[in-house]
Length: 63
Image 1 (cartoon, rainbow, N blue to C red):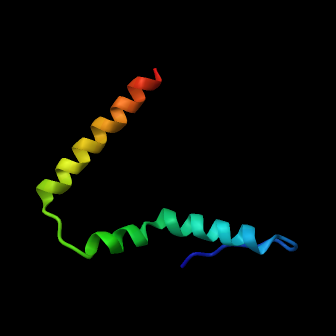
Image 2 (cartoon, rainbow, N blue to C red; image 1 turned 60 degrees about the horizontal axis):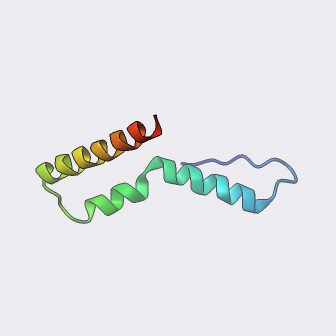
């Protein structure tokens, strides 16, 4: 259960923003979407490799 402590006088918009951020970090929505359809393990590994190459290229471009 996600708990967002609100200080007295704090804006409700800010509290909602904190809640959304915490909810997104849990990854619940991402997991639900991934469970809607089966993806073969080989395809998952392929996508992970492609993503790793992409991230590595970004890091090399920064340097």
